[in-house]
Length: 323
Image 1 (cartoon, rainbow, N blue to C red):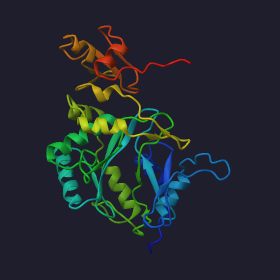
Image 2: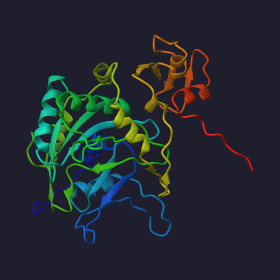
Image 3: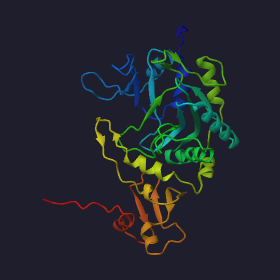
Image 4: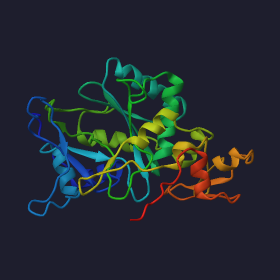
């Protein structure tokens, strides 16, 4: 940390273009937690009012110059899209798995950037435009499955973690943040750089800008006819989300967790209707349309009602009792 860095306005602008997808963020504590020794992250709030503090260019500048360290969120809840995907690995032989993934990404003609971390590394993929978090996750989990790379949360204590960690998040919720690249890790007391460029802020950002960005057309081609592993879908649906008010929302029912393979047609996921299938219909597997931007909205073109669909998958709509 002996070298002093100055973040120019242009550097901050380029960093925002690469990494910032929403104004919410976290800050890494400068002091370790009692007993754990870990530098935890927290969401900053305004003094007095307790209102959320939003990310600004000044905050990014402080992060790059080393006076604070921020965490960034992948998903924007207004669109359920992200502008990057990050694969976090911090277990024994983690770098071997990240390099294996990077090699396969290169075979797919997808550029990625490998960043050092305190106990392993982070592999970043940048997107040509914000893409649906669910499709991004399907691609990475499919890669990991084909390569035999362990995934944390699928019955394994150690394995890669994929950011975004959710297919979608509710309005006012956050998801999970990851340490913003090129800042100073408070616990390690140092920066962790990307391989492939000189260790200066300017060279690092220029390197990231030159990387080919993954397009929506490519992503849809890679994920055609594929879906998340069942255990990943079910685990994600059980995780409560933290809202802006700091409360834990109950896990919400998501129809995508209970249907088979999907494909995107226009603004919808299309898949087999469970109710039709139960009656021996919908052999083409395209009766059920689920709105991509908000999976709470779904419709069977053959006329099955929501009550019938929910009953067919064993999750009937709860009956609201009146006093």
